Length: 134
Figure 1: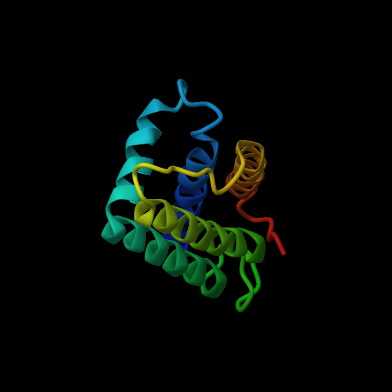
Figure 2 (figure 1 turned 90 degrees about the vertical axis):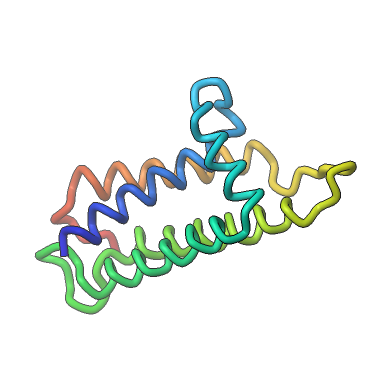
């Protein structure tokens, strides 16, 4: 299903931008608004997580041909699920914190590394749609 493929690439790109927003704040200033929305509104964070889980399920069950029928693109699906849970856990913790004592949950270096990995997966997944990433 080509729609799930397109959605998975878009979700991976948005996740990569969210991972990289702290490192490249000036260049990614529009993404700061999305990050703020996800931190402030738990409903938006839940929608982002549920969308990620549904997209991962779709690309596993309906891969782009010639992918295997059951596994599909396992690495992008796994990384979408990882990103969805990562943002849900970290952003829900930030939204419940006291405003007076902000703490950095994940280091900027780790976020940059996760962003680069997510970017690489998105680029490979987009550039070679017929290659199955298992």
